[in-house]
Image (tube, rainbow over all chains, first blue to last red; front, top):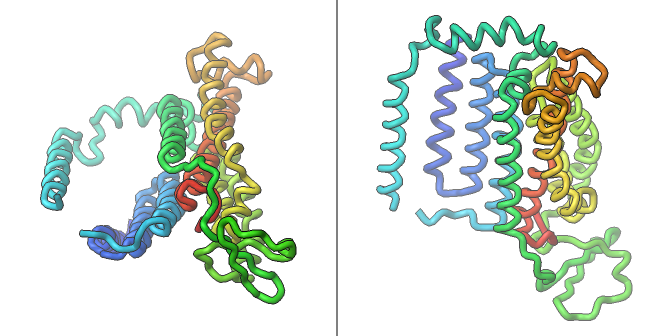
Amino acid sequence: MIWQLDLAILTLVVIAGIGAITVKDLLGAAILFGAYSFMMCLLWSIMGAVDVSFTEASVGAGASTVFFVAAVFRTTRRTKD
Amino acid sequence: MKIIGLIIAVLTGALLIYGTVDFPEWADPASPASTHLSPHFIEKTMEETSVPNIVTAVLADYRGYDTMFETTVIFAAGVVCFFLLRILKKEGPRQRLYRHALTGMTIRIRDGEKRPSVLDEFERIDTMWTPYDVIIKTVCRLLIPFIQLFALYVIAHGHHSPGGGFQGGVILGASIILLAISQDLRTAIKRMSEKVDAILSPAGVFIYAGTGALCLLLGGNFLDYSALASILHVDPVTARSHGILIVEIGVGVAVMATLIWIYNNVSSAGKYDEGL
C-alpha cells in the first residue's frame, strides 16, 4: 500500500462524494457518482479486495451510472432544492 | 425538509460510528473472526471445495444463503421497477419520425394520420433523436461480442480469478444496454424481448434455489453441493466445485436479465417504444 496514492485517491473520493450531493445539475451528479464509484474501486483494489473492486467497477461505475442517466433523460436535469 | 434530512443523516452516521466502538481492534489477532473463521477458510477451502479463489468459495458455498437472497433481492428490484413504471396500455407516441437512410430526409407522422406506402425505405427514429453516428454504431457492434465473451469468461473462471456470477451477469447485461444506447431501444428489445427478460430473471433465482433443493432431495443439507456427487459422478469435493459453478450461472442469468429489464423500463418510461 503506497500511502501517497492512497491519500490522493481518498481525497478524490471525498471531493466526488461532496460534489455529487451539492451539484445542481442531476446529470453532473450522476457522472460524479460514477467517478466516486471508480475511485472506490481503486481503493478496494489497493486494499486487496479484488472481487469487491470488480463488482464496484461493473455495478457502481458501469450499470448504476447508466440507470441514473436514463432516469435523468426521462425526468429533469434540474433539482428543485 | 432539508434540515430534517440533515438531522437524520447526522444521527444515523453518529449511531453507526458509535457502533464501531464495540468492534474488535483494527487487525486484532484475538478477534473471533481472526481466531475461528479466517484460518478455517484460508487453510481448508482448497481441500474442502477444490476452489482456489477463497472469495468465490465463501460467497457461493459457505455463505450460500446470503448470495441466494442477494439474487432474490435483485430479482425483486426488477419486478418492482416493472410494476412501478410499465404502461401496458397500447398507446404510441403522439408523433413518429421516419428518416430516409440515404438522403437523410425526415418525415413526421402524427397519430391518426394515414401512413404513406413508401415507408418501407425509411427507418424509424426517436422523437428526441440523437444524431446517427456511424463511428459509435460500428465500434459498438465490433465490441459487443468481445464484451459478452469476456462476461462468459468472468462467470466460468470465477473459481480461479476475481469475478463470478454477479460481475459476469452485469457485464452481459451491460453489453445489451450498450446495444440499446448505440443503436436504439427497439434494436435491443428485438434481441432481448421483455418476455425473455421476465422469464430469465426468475429462472436464474430458480436455478440457484433449485440446486439447493436438489441437494436436499439427494440427502444433504440445503445448498450442500457435496450431495450432488451421485448425479454428477464425481467425488464430493469436486461436486462442491461444480455446484458453485451451477449457482454462479444462475446468479449470472438473473442479474443479466434484471439489469436489462430495469434499463428498458427506466429509459423508455415504461412504454418500450422510444428510449435513450
